[in-house]
Image (cartoon, rainbow, N blue to C red; front, side, top):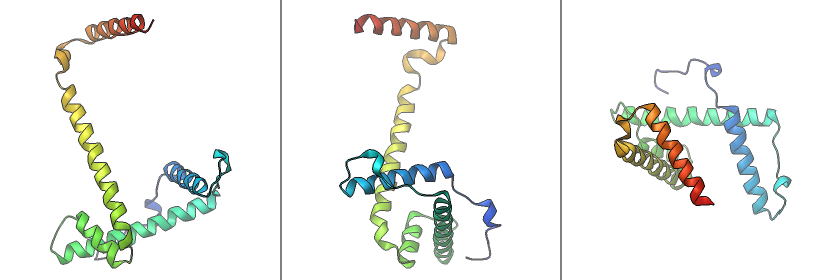
Length: 152
């Protein structure tokens, strides 16, 4: 792990609410694959089991980032790239996860592109950037009124 060590385990964690959401989604998907029709019939996980899962995930991230760092240092690179992560996954015996990881990266890139495109479209929208807040509120109320009339 080169000369740089992590300061302490106490400094690192994953958001428990996010982890719980992921666990719930995965368990729900697994129960639906098992042929159960009832949405509420999926498995649950105890808090100690969730905490252990978080600790395992953190250890995996430590190993992966350390290996990727070593690979980038061997190549005299100062930045860890996707290729370094993929090589680290392969060297650690997790190469079969690379295609799934690539899919997630592509989804993320598409999401980012849509965010940028939406931001570009909104720049100077109809001259709105030059209008005051009161004028924008008046226009909003007018549009809402028009929408209400067309719905009836």
